[in-house]
Length: 449
Ligand SMILES: *Cc1c(COP(=O)(O)O)cnc(C)c1O
Image (cartoon, rainbow, N blue to C red; front, side, top):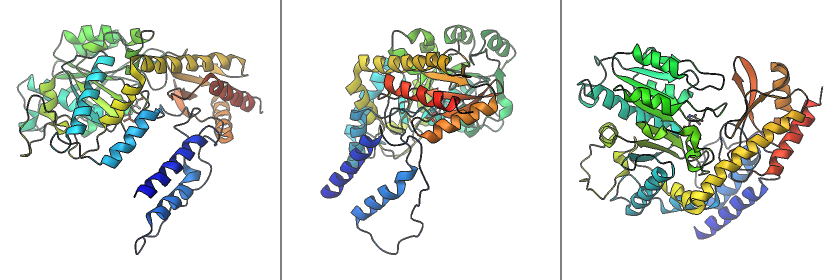
């Protein structure tokens, strides 16, 4: 075992060391072993064969010039802690099954609330990603808004329940729709509010939607649009929602982390007045996959929706059983790499990471001015840069050439009915020279007729 793990650590380190020089995108076909083996294989052979076969299909996404989707890297302490989580192999579902996991997750939970300035008494759970954070938070919301009108989801289910309206911005992330579907809300219960040019919900549109929605209501807003980085005007939205019985949920997958920076926190002013927040640690905090966080201010609704009715444990004041807050039972100690990331970066390190990524995004945005045919679709708000070339065809061919070149990788999107390119600067390793190399790759592609 010891020799195998050392060997594997060497292979992993060699891979990480290669990130800066290898082509950023995948380079070839992956020939994965297809035949089920009849008998045992030496573990070292298993690992060597895996590394060799996987290599052409590995994407340098933890590296400094991967700008696709919204993809964080992994800060060293967090990656190392994640290895320990696997080696310790704790079942972090309860305090009894792993007092260490429960204790460090509790610390990580209180640090997250403090950093993001969310209500200190809130429930916190470490889940796989923002997707399951939405499911958890919106399950709590479903409990509360129906409980307000005398309907118990836990006992009565949803069949025959008073209809619930869910108000969302037209640019909400698709994971919100899927969470709603999993929770039994059909598309017909969703009401869309129009957005402005940068994808931010209009307050007038929300007011109208609230006024014409009589029954139990959930409002879901976003802090950080995946394309533009725009923020719904949450302070004004919170004022409106507070006058009603509606539940206010925030999708802050990456954008919520601006709360850690004094320079950018103003964008998410008022977000603390919401009822629940879903966000990722594997994006901007640079914790390895997979790592999402859900925070729910109403702990009664949170546990009513999630608590595990098993006969194992008697809950006590000072003992936190993660399974009472997450949709999982058995689970890895996902909060520990979050703990390690925050422990190593500290408040100032997280603020620096956020601000550096935003500054680098702007550097790229300004650099586009020197590239023939390139134009910003909107001015960068935070770390997302949305741009395009003369027409959809040109946008696609220039992007394709950059992707194939392997200096950098980012993906396509659509905005206002046109093709665009979306860049997300979310990695702790990215530097000005990476931005400049990426600009050079676009300049070259754009000068190819
Ligand atoms: C990435 C993202 C999500 C989904 O997060 P996962 O970690 O993929 O589950 C939700 N909302 C926004 C705005 C995102 O950027």
